[in-house]
Length: 411
Image (tube, rainbow, N blue to C red; front, side):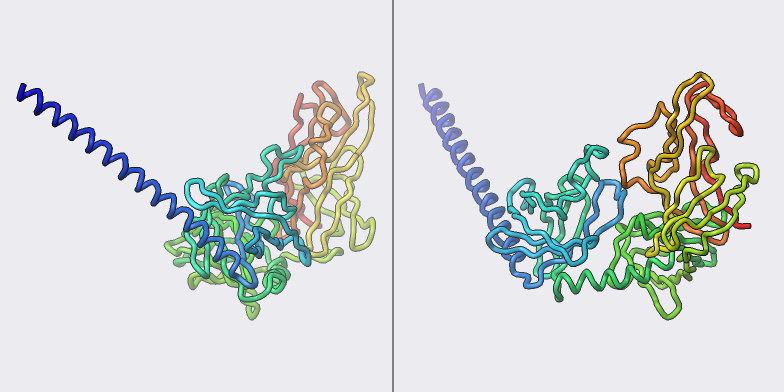
């Protein structure tokens, strides 16, 4: 009987202990909830306290495919936010924001904003948009800088308190871009080894190659007031680099004590006029002629169906092809063939009847290349229906493929 009483007491004590643990757990949970709520309140207070707002270095896509873009954001206590976007100077858009809790404090742009949602809004050609974020986990909040993590991309981004107005901040970045776009290529020597560097201002990517043309480092970047900043560090020859300052005195980029001597890639409209040889196509000759001065060209001899129109970009000093209807012809079997010059993922693609589609020719797919010391580099593919033949080109079946890289050498 005594043993039974002892067992009963032990069971009762264990129940009391279990209840005590449950209460302790509940107390800890409450405290954690309180901390999250306090963090949300603090984050909102910091966001809305910036008189001029915040500068956000925004990187869409989890593989950082598109480079970085500058935003300015100004928050109010009543959950309104005004957004300025680097690519839309002089404009702003206002919408709402929300502070929520999910794996920590979250800043959400919860109603549509034409600038903030550019890289997150799907389209016919991009059902996942550009893998951009409009919800951000706040990893660290200070009065001067906020560290964010894109919920979708996982990219780490930063917001810095502005000491000037959003308009002034974006103007200073545009001023630097106006200088940057003149210089696309350069050379550098690191630890006694020479390298070539390409600062691709359109795709916002720096690529460093060795003497054999092999890439040794490549990163996307964002424009800054003084030059560019890579999305992450790169290391070449033991030198770690991320921030690059442009020096107007000698037209160079410098980073971590390393100087990149830049060569201007800007070309005037008249520089592209003339006759070129394409060695990869058995010394094929093409001619670039004036169509509308300082605006467009006619390119004779490039394709075997018509002469495509090429546009001149006066800002970048470069040229581009846009999707365009080329020709209509009848095959040996009496079939009507409609040819388009179309661009996909940076390649020039020649579509026959079987391949024409609205998805393939939507505006915005553009090929861009610049005239350098070795000529112009482009890509071309020719697609044809199986079994079709045309003068001057051999039938290769479903895909008639030219060399991926062709260099235009001016004569």
